[in-house]
Length: 230
Ligand SMILES: Nc1ncnc2c1ncn2[C@@H]1O[C@H](COP(=O)(O)OP(=O)(O)OP(=O)(O)O)[C@@H](O)[C@H]1O
Ligand SMILES: [Mg+2]
Image (cartoon, rainbow, N blue to C red; front, side, top):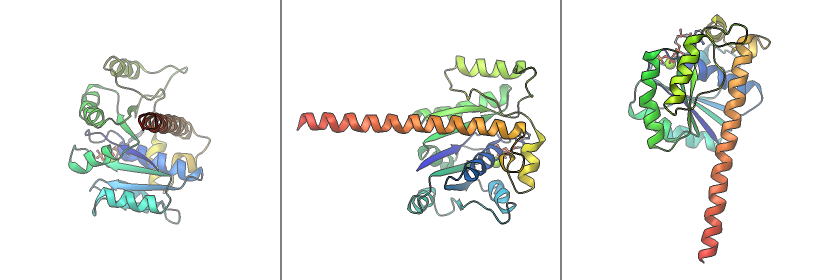
């Protein structure tokens, strides 16, 4: 089971928006998905309620994240998407600890970039793979990133922080599709918003495959060396 934790202590960075769109995209692709609303604000829960007849399986952390994840595992869930609150409280720490991959949304600009540090520090301390996703960016012109996006990316790369190669632009579609009970990928599959989410999803899938392969290689080497020692 793969666990994607979306975290940033900066309010309004786009955690819930990215979590809802990614989960719905994976769900529409036929993956068995579970969403976990780790934020008492309940925004992801609201997005899911608005989906009417096609909600995703939803859990909260009221009875503990470990319990929610154990139940997802038993139910044969393939992908779990955890939305978190704009804090570094214990539930956020647990969500990072449980992650296969931590996604850190950040709007371009120094306030969001500064807030990234706390989440990066926690992910590094727990040895968790992570990447920043630049969100609500000015749209590209002639395929070129806006200066603020390019500067933000360069800053993060100088700091040694992995950054998603694409961008999620500031598009009304990211908000109004969720409000209408769907995601960009579902209600407007040919839209630029859907294309951006698809690119992010493909990057997540690729990264998680590489992470899982690395763990499998490490386990194989460990069993090999144990075998040698015996
Ligand atoms: N790419 C985007 N384009 C347009 N609007 C966006 C985008 N990303 C987020 N928003 C809007 O910005 C606001 C904050 O987004 P969101 O609620 O996803 O952030 P958050 O990090 O979950 O916030 P909180 O920290 O309060 O949980 C919302 O109104 C959302 O619709
Ligand atoms: Mg939120």
